[in-house]
Amino acid sequence: MDIPADLADLDLDALIGMPIEQATAVVESEGGFVRVAAPGQAVTLDYRPDRVTLVVQDGIVVRQVGIG
Image 1: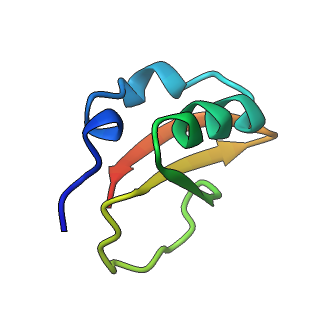
Image 2: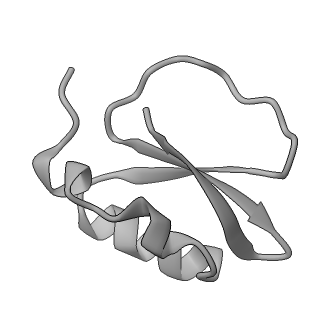
C-alpha cells in the first residue's frame, strides 16, 4: 500500500500550530484523513497509508506523528 502522492508531498510540520479543523481540511484536500491523539495517548500501530496522526492539545496541533 503506497502513500497517496499528494499526501506524501505534504509538509506535515507546517500543520503544527494550526487549529485541528484547519489541519484536517489541509490533509483531506490532499487525499488523506486525520487521526487525533492527545499528548501521551497510546495509538494503534496498524499501517494506513492515507492516515496522518496529529497530537492535539486544546484544539491546536502540537505535534505530527506521521503518515501511517
